[in-house]
Amino acid sequence: MKFKCSRERLLGGLQTVGSVVSTRGMKPVYESVLILSRDGQLQLQGTDLEVAIRFNLEDEQLVVEEHGSLVVPAARLAAILKEVDDDVIDFTWEEQTLSVDCRGSHFKVNGYPPEEFPEIPDFPTESTIQLPAEVFRRLVARSAFAAAKEKMRYALNGVLFSLEGDRLQLVGTDGRRLAHAMALVENPDGASINAIAPTKGINQMARIIEGDEVIDLSMKDNQLAARTGTAVVVSRLVEGTFPKFEEVIPENCERKAIFNREELISAVRKARLLTNKESQSVRFVFEEGRLSLNARAAEVGEANVSISMSYEGEPTAVAFNPGYVLEGLSVMEGETVSFEFRSPTSPAKFTDKGEFTYVVMPIDIQ
Image (cartoon, rainbow, N blue to C red; front, side, top):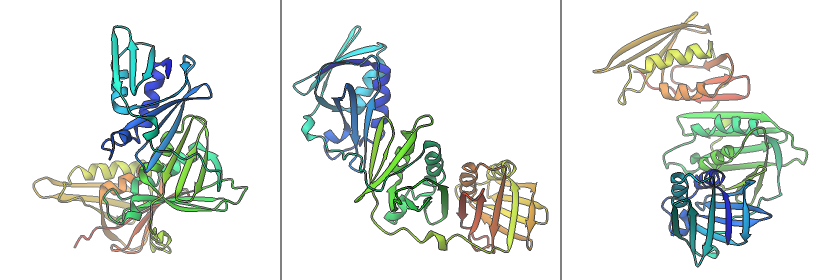
């Protein structure tokens, strides 16, 4: 295989594909990228056996002199391209070695037989829907952050992806908070999807979207796939049963408050300054027309911050992890945010325009 192409374009493609490539693969070939010529373009492929990417490199300076395919370590090739300044670089693949020719520099990178590279499935055509990229990005941003980071119940290390009729829902939870994002989408074929996608996979799907593209989503067997004009991301699904999240979201709450979102974010940030690792707790004191935030930590000090609000219910004090509260508020978009809870020991929920619900468990302040 022999070709020349833009250094900047190839580096960008390697960084996209390299984001899923394993850094400690069971075999060296799993830490590599497959580059092949197809339909007058270069296609880059990478996988960690859980998430896989096919990326079509769009490059006006690409010239393929000899077609073929090659497999080289992704991180090593990207490191070379970062250090050289040529606009266009020549590449030659021969006897499992990639030669990289630049002005004043010549590199030989040992690779692997292309037939050893794991096969990446094509985009399935079953259960396919199409939606604006902006909508999908927003759904992922509003759900994936709440999925479990620790290896606990396996199903919680992913995002529930649910499509019924025109209602698309993404839900993430780690057992201490829950994020539920919803959007209405066109589903002319009546596709139905109910699956758990790994957080890495769903984030990668959102990451490949550029501009105002439309994204195709499809599920087949144990895989969820996303496709844009330049890339396909395929993710293995998580096995297990997702919790019945509807039962966690509180309804008919006796205590209700409405805040200015930016004012609440600022107040929580201020109170958080006087917390530490041992005392990650801020006390929310609800009174008519006013919310007081109190934080206290031994050998650190204390903070008292207050803001105005609209409040219905008995005066109450309840404590939350300020980091959890801020993460939920940061993905909301409305000027105001609604907050509801039943008691200081029951789950509380934030809602934003009816499209996003965020449930947070309180901390025992006794």
